[in-house]
Image (cartoon, rainbow, N blue to C red; front, top):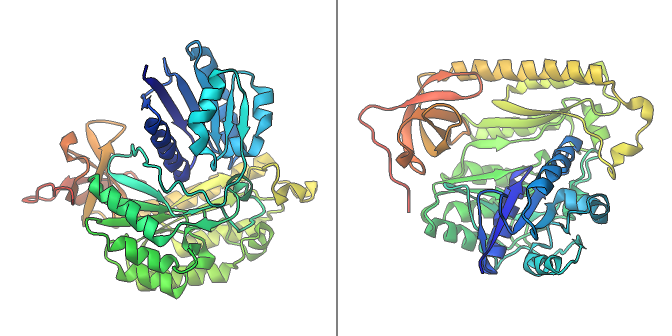
Amino acid sequence: MTRTVYIETYGCQMNVSDSELMYGTLQASGYTPVEGPEGADVVLVNTCAIRENAEQRVIGRLGELRRDLKPGAVLGVTGCMAQRLGPRLLATDTRVQLVVGPDAYRMLPQLIEGARGGDRVTATDFDLEEHYEDVVARRFEGVKAWIPVQRGCDYRCTYCIVPTTRGPERSRKLAEVVRETQEVVAQGLTEVILLGQTVNSYHDGTHDFADLLRAVGAVDGIRRVRYTSPHPNDFSDRVIAAMAETPTVCAHVHLPMQSGSTSMLKRMLRRYTREEYLDCVARLRAAMPGLGLTTDIIVGFPGETEEEFADTLSLVREVRFDDAFTFKFSLREGTPATRMPPEWTIPDAVIDARYDALLGTVRGISRERNLGRLGERMEVLVEKEARKGELLQCRSRDFKTVLVQGPTEWIGRYLTVELTGTTGATFTGTLVPDRHPLPMAG
């Protein structure tokens, strides 16, 4: 009898990629993926641990799933929350039978069979050699492929749980990444996103990230290469030159800033100053005029003063990001931030006010920049149906979201569009007259 599996994914792009690996592993063992948990023989919740609210959301979801599981179904928790909590998850939720960390997905078929026999198992050991090279991922993004090139992280930012949940940094061999990219092209996909916790620190012992960008970008049939997330310290001149000189590498960088204050960055253990961050931005923009630049910013980190927050606002205004992901600080068990003096804790009301001020500043700059681009023509890749209306969601090379009207048959194709409107965050566009949807490469 064919058994079915449903994986519900939370968190970052690495988790999306890991879910594709899990589906691939289980499919090779005879499981059939299904679109929902109802009636599935196996339900896995692939989790994030970066903030407390992410974990609370998963705990609530597990409660919902318990009520809907069919008799005999196996319920498991995978990913970063599983790695962080380990056996505690089994102790606090009697319906969960499996707790599996990111380096143990190869064992899923055997672990599931054990769970059918009544086992309740935790598998959270790190495996520094595991890159799942022989696993054929079941890709479900449709028009692009996530390709992990690096796992783990050697940076020890004081707010971050990733070194605990993902282990130390290790990189795949360049040849293996190129091989997977070639397989992606054979499947008809033309865009790849290279993944790593600090992806531009990639080094396989012989090749660095500059070599990797050039090699992947040269694969026949690839039209777009992206990557996430880099660290400001690892943008060497070699890496920037590789970006600028490789036509398939998209002109967009997501450059986490976290704070605009040197003193705050020091407490965060980010290992760069405000001035060094600005220098990195300047070097990137000098090499790639028109570069799309986005960032991450944390508000309310322990000890944040009004002056330090003002430094963050002023840096946002100086850099003028295209967009920013803004977060309220979340204290994570096991991080160095838990050892900071309790009196450094910022009151919730202050955090809320600062967050609103930051969000307003980011959105105002983004809207102003986007209004200035109306009338531009650009190439976009049609990714999927938009959430609202009879529109398609597209992405430009510099990572702008553009909504266009057209048939679903355009998904996976490249269009030339003219930007006709903006909400401040996204654009609307129309197909350029006398231009037709370009077929997919490969």
